[in-house]
Amino acid sequence: MLLFFSKYKIFGLVLLILSIIIISIIYQVLKPNEVLPIFQPAKVNAELVDSTIQHVKKYHIISDFSLINQNGKTITQEDYKNKIYVADFFFTTCQTICPIMTDNMLEVQNKLKNDSTIMLLSHSVTPEIDSVAQLKKYALKKGVNDTKWNLVTGEKKEIYKLARKSYLAVKTDGNGDQYDMIHTENFILVDKKKRIRGFYDGTDDLDIEQLLKDIEILKREN
Image (tube, rainbow, N blue to C red; front, side, top):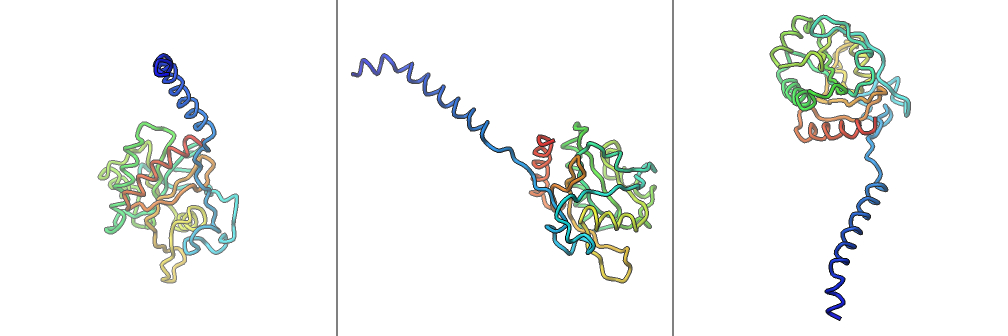
């Protein structure tokens, strides 16, 4: 009996290895691909959503826009066509969460610097202060890559509308001016179809790690 098992020992080992490989292949084939959720206004904290769209449960996309970047160039949806991008809201004179957010966005920029399918978009919530010259100064100070990351300014009304009705990213400050706003720390992940696929705390290192992982998932989906 021992002689029999000894004789077929190598055969059994080979069979075991082949079985493991086959099972692994089957598992990979059958394992469902990770898919990110598609965020709709009705599923987001109502405090961040304009009252006119809080009921929307499907088909929400980022609206068209026309803003001016740190180089004085007009930036529209065409500049982000067929791109995955990360958006946020900030202002250059902010001394609280904005420097942390900018540093973390810079990390995202540097991690994905060789990937032309990923872009970044930061909107100033104080466009009356953040002129083109001010944005350029800030961009140079922070190390912004102009080909990948636009810091934009423009009409406050348009930026507010984008924040509340498109990106679902800011709160009003209640001071009576309908176009004043309190921006959140959120980074918003947008897919190639202009849909919101994730919200991340731009001041939290763990959330930034998750954002980078989710971008890879989104790239595979697209």
